[in-house]
Image (cartoon, rainbow, N blue to C red; front, side, top):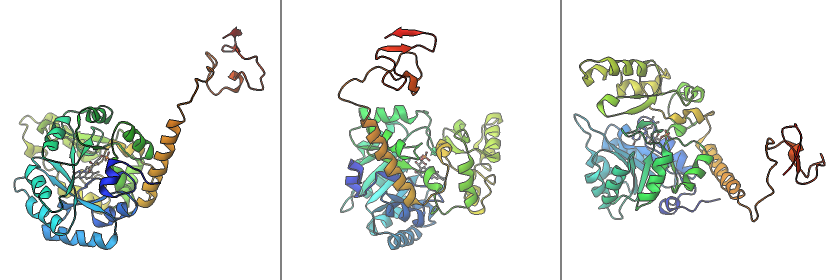
Length: 368
Ligand SMILES: Cc1cc2nc3c(=O)[nH]c(=O)nc-3n(C[C@H](O)[C@H](O)[C@H](O)COP(=O)(O)O)c2cc1C
């Protein structure tokens, strides 16, 4: 059954579930599988070494799906920043009109994407209401509100989604989706109830058949608990949530004990190159890799089709169940002091107690 939210209407998708940009994971295989399943898949631009490679990847994705898909453009500080303008131009040239932006100073890129004819629909990801409001001024269409639970760059204010989403609902003049900590339809239903127009998931989509990473990493996610992530680089105000392993433990130790506070001391531990290798060689302890607290909720490795349809069904069931909690008339009170579900506590049950009469913890009879 299709959902009807600002997100599904704007993007022309059936189920309000977005696959967030993921470095070294967001290739055409995954993006097309999510889009084919009725959600929105995103190719991650910077997994491609050059804008021309991104063009090829977009074309590959077009071969794999006729459904809408988008591109993630992440703007991170770097000594030699990639040519973001050229990546954005390829996106436009290839006719892509859905872009997820993230990171610092997205103004010029958003301007470029919005100047296209027709303009891009932009989902901008942020971890604070302040940044979200700045992005609104830049003309973004949706905010993707990333709570502290999320994988990757969590920001520095540590506000989890229960607060952040309601703050977004209270303050945001544009629609928003909920990101960070989502893995199932109960989560989608909760996000919709809090005012979001859909959800964005990263870690959950990493653990699908189509995610182009080593099987051992998917198994590591299935085995992990919600406590198995680690925050690194807080000292440099670039806090990232990563899968807890030997390397993150070493990185955190260096971060804590360094007397110089020089980033160079921790840099070898958080090398992106080694992180990429993890996804290829399947050794979860080879380097650092990104994962969210939601790993505790992930217990299987389904196809994107099965996952997205399961989420759809769970969300519909949850919304229906929630609605059934509201009735025309207040029901008879449950028996005071008796555990709910105990059949002997039901005055109309075969135990045959007169209505209004009950046993209190088996110690005697009382009138209600
Ligand atoms: C392996 C991995 C790589 C990621 N890389 C990026 C990235 O390059 N750019 C970005 O905007 N977000 C990135 N993210 C964050 C996701 O897009 C998404 O916001 C986040 O995973 C949501 O939290 P969740 O994992 O609890 O669903 C990454 C997440 C993961 C798991």
